[in-house]
Every structure is written in C-alpha cells, then in structure tokens.
Amino acid sequence: RDRWQEVLVPAARLHAYRNEAARLIDSASWARAFEVTDPGASGQLLEWRSPYFDVRLVEFLFSLPPMPHFAEKDLVRESLRGSMPEEVRRRPKRALSRDPSALAFNRRRERWIEEVESAAEVACFVDRRILAKNLSEASRDDYRSSQQAFAVGLSIWLTRRNR
View 1: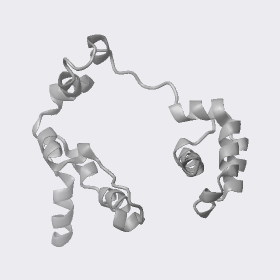
View 2: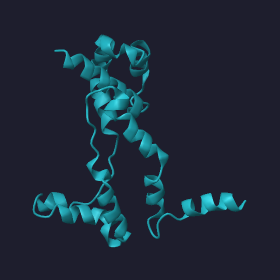
View 3: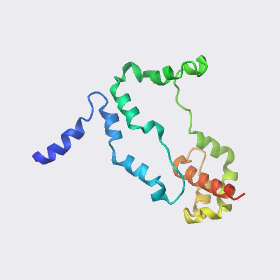
View 4: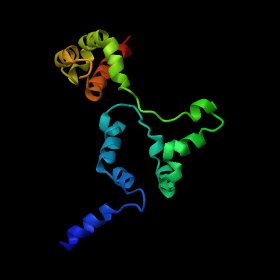
C-alpha cells in the first residue's frame, strides 16, 4: 500500500497551480506521438517539428501564474503586439460555430468521394470502398472529421503527388 501511494501521490500533484496541464504534458501519449513521427519509425524521410513543445518554452510557461497571462490569450496577444493589426490582435476569442473540415466536407462531398475512389495508392492504408460508402452515407451533421478527414487528405495527397 505504501509503495502504491508513492506512485499515486506525485501524480496527484505535479505542479502547484497548473496541475491539470502538467498531467497532460506528463502523459505517455506524447512519447508515442513523437515516436511515430520519427523517420526511423515511420520509414519516411520527413522531419516532424513541434516548436511549441520545446522544453524551455514549456518550463517558461509553467513558471507563469495562469492569471492574468492565460486569460483571454493575453500572453499570445502581447507577443503579437506590433506584428499584427490591433483590431485582429485584440478581438475577443470566439468558438467556431462548426468544425471547418465538416463544412468543407459538406461543400465538397462528391469531389472527396471521387478522390478517395481514384486514389489507388491509399488502398494499403484504408479500404477505399468502405471510406467512400461512409462518406456518401454521412448526413450533414453526422460527419466525423478526425478519421475520415485524415483518410481523405491522405488520398488527395497521394493522388496529387504523382501529377
């Protein structure tokens, strides 16, 4: 029981006032995310960069108290002073009304289905027939952006890179 508490207690309090963010950064999923994008793991000569996940930047951000620096994106807004128009820099934060990829899908559904069906190169990654069927049967409000948009994007990229 004592050993179990040693494991649990540090995880319960990783940071004095940014504990939730610290737990997210401490998650094992980050290691997997970075490992799968490494050329040695992916087999692709493509270097993936995550400039905002630099240890120095993360440590700096954790050294700041959340208020007022993170309220209304104050820190980002201040960093953009002089390099962005004031009306853009100071406009209020607003949530998107809908997922932009879902809007694009609704406008380009038939074209995306054609892209998927014609992308022979993507067949080793996804079943084009099933993806095209799911895209054609999806209602305007049922579109699932993450998996389908990734597969459609991959299909388009693979088709166009050979042109």
